[in-house]
Length: 253
Image (cartoon, rainbow, N blue to C red):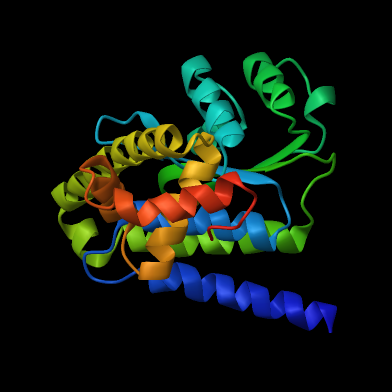
């Protein structure tokens, strides 16, 4: 029964990612769904995703926690780490014990350990030889993912990559550029909205993000639209009860 339950969770994961692949889909929703779903079904503690922008530079576009976000930013600042290596080579990278890893990526090692992470697996977002980015899955326990979990992570990443590079985007590269630019703008908007909610409810940034994501999912609207509503204050009344519940231990998702 446990194995059947896992199979159903994996099936639901593919459905969740595929559901974002609609006309005029929001890339931030797609990437957030990808990392969040992978972290949940593969029983890891956090996830982050780097995507290359129009100038060929990697950017952090999704993460499941502030800790994962910090580690991803540290990788970019250092220009090295498993996710950067995965993007560069197009090959998955697994580190079962970060503390015992070599000095190949000292900045990443120190940042990851400081945030409580002990193991990491990086999966490329690739299609037909083109690599768009990489996804990191972090664990607070030592150990590598098994082969089945690695295959699931890669398959979900492949589905998301196909969504980014739809046929029209492959034919018209400027559409990809526009989507990536919009995704970067969305990222900034979401960070601003998290700050507004954190200040409003005296909560931390992770609680603020859970409130944003929970509202978006419950009302079936994009994270970008919710973040915009928070930053322009039009949705702030809707969040008063949500942030109060999270601050007192209630769930908002």
